[in-house]
Length: 176
Image (tube, rainbow, N blue to C red; front, side, top):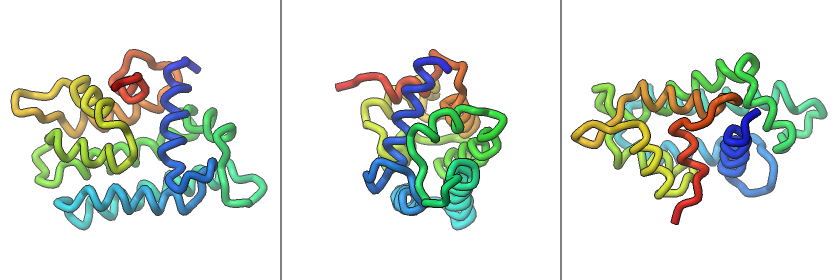
């Protein structure tokens, strides 16, 4: 596993620990879902249902695969190697990437405008300077939009253990 991948996983674990108790549990995913849906006011019911289902699958996959003792919590130690295993976690991430990127395109034109991207990523908990750096790394067009496909691909790459120098690395870079 590359250092960059480990840093990305540590960050996403800390953000998904929405209730701040040091582990992931079902409540974290409910809180995160609610925060993201609050930022997606212009999205239709289908897109909202898809992201809700994607967050639920993310949690269910973690719980099924990693909660051997049935206590309802996932530690960072268990989370790290599992989410970076494309064969075991890849389909869950693909669903999540598709749902989140589609949520950013409420008008269905295949493009995501910076303000909504920033709102959704802020709802997840990423830092604003890092969010803008990520958006810029996706190569926005002259009207400051990125494609849904670019964002979905970027989400999937974020969880790739062997990739570095990807747009997602902008989320872990120190910024002021």
